[in-house]
Length: 119
Image 1 (cartoon, rainbow, N blue to C red):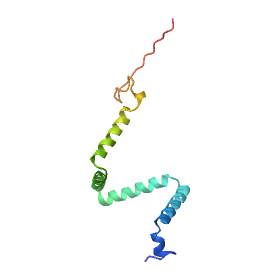
Image 2 (image 1 turned 60 degrees about the horizontal axis):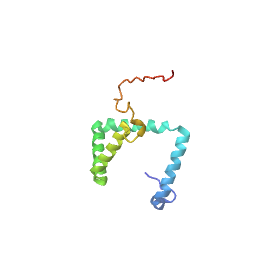
Image 3 (image 1 turned 180 degrees about the vertical axis):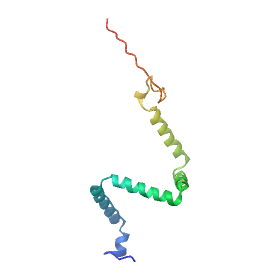
């Protein structure tokens, strides 16, 4: 049985007020239990969902979300974020990354030789 609270339906329609109350409540919980609390309950919730629906559930909701984004933003969106990720990884938009080591694979070992010009 649900118990009515002060303000009832009118209060439920106040989205900004509810959002603010939720934000304040979250801050109190974070202060009291620490930010790791959220990670822990997220892991518990994720584990419960995995146990109940299986790992395919996550695959399915990921595909649905991807399709929604594709419809809202277009296929070019994925190309753009892929390019940004590639640039960030290779440093192509970073002038300092254009050194001799910029073309070296990440798992390669490099050696630097110093030369003295003193006579």
